[in-house]
Length: 223
Image 1 (spheres, rainbow, N blue to C red):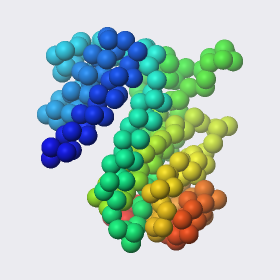
Image 2: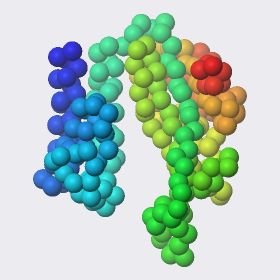
Image 3: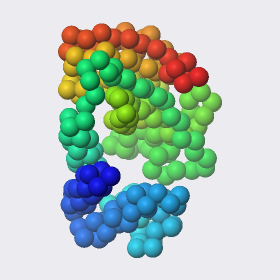
């Protein structure tokens, strides 16, 4: 348990050090404290160190590098996995899921079409009868480890479909995890699991270590 706490603290310190100002470091500390306490009160309004409006500004307005945070977190995860990898006969499961965050009302920065060519198209779209943010997520499961690895937002017609986004996500799975292992790609029926598992990205993932590829429907596995 002490080892887990030690590595968690090191990751927190690394993430906080990426913030460009002391004010933003304090805001991130307050947010992480809400989650790590695990008392069932993770929302910003429950923080005592910072006001909810201050934490909202930190998340929505300040220019800190989300990519640097993601890279640092992934690096720490891979380091831990390298220390605790299960045996080679343990398969690597790659789970692809479509999550819809329903939105009601108007969202200035997410849902309004602009005539400005430099303004990106809105993220709030309608898919399968649901209006909101539609996020394609990829998780890797190996032994007792289950890690959310990456995601993409579906941006509507004229942009890559959820199935195409899923195939792109497969290219991000680290080779050191798939090498020499059976790879099982599980996807929701929305993607067409056969189409995803038979894509060039999935085939490349499986062949990177000379290993086998299996496919299945995530819903049937969870039933």
